[in-house]
Length: 260
Image 1 (tube, rainbow, N blue to C red):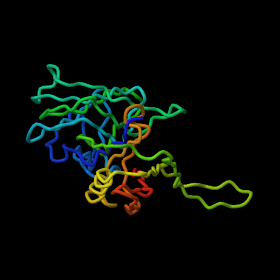
Image 2 (tube, rainbow, N blue to C red; image 1 turned 30 degrees about the horizontal axis):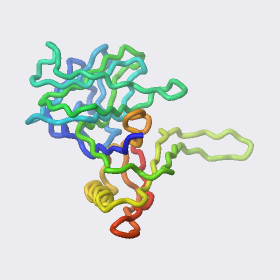
Image 3 (cartoon, helix red, strand yellow; image 1 turned 180 degrees about the horizontal axis):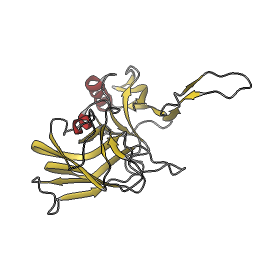
Image 4 (cartoon, rainbow, N blue to C red; image 1 turned 90 degrees about the vertical axis):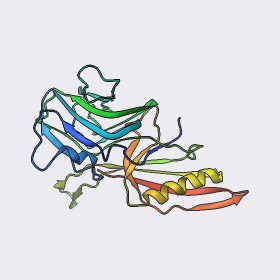
């Protein structure tokens, strides 16, 4: 199992965006995919092929991509592409399929996380979706494309994954309840035991950057289950370490709560 990975920010948040000829719905423009709020979506009328193109002011490095809050069908083809010019029609320098993942009940997991084997450097990046499924409008929320970071050692065994249903209903004995349904979300918890000072400093650097206020991507199993075991989340607990000997210490259990 590879070490955990963090995608703290997107290198394309300041990029100029273009969209294919498909119409954007009023109030739900393409720029919403650059917004920190994953529930703030870009939505368009569905057509077999749709793309969003990002033009950076300089060559931009990408080795990890996350797409949150999408409604792609399970047979959709999702491509991440990179090029030196805006002309993708003649064949981009990079074109990689981002798998749409389903759960055990064949329901699409409404997020995609993908890590590349190498870091790609391009000025133009494009997200292309080919989906002839039954959805009438295509939507996607936060898109993060940047460089992941990973600690020098992995988290301690005994990490936790919790799935929470925030749906609300008034329970009555002997009666079936009417419920207001809400999306489930996950919480990851882990700690670092006997962590060297370099690992402690690494984790404190992350905490100083994002605190409990900024959302980012955390991947527990980035190489074999990048979508299943990744969440767009915020840290929900203080960062605390207990020192042992020779600058080695334990980083107490941290809770990361998924945002949707």
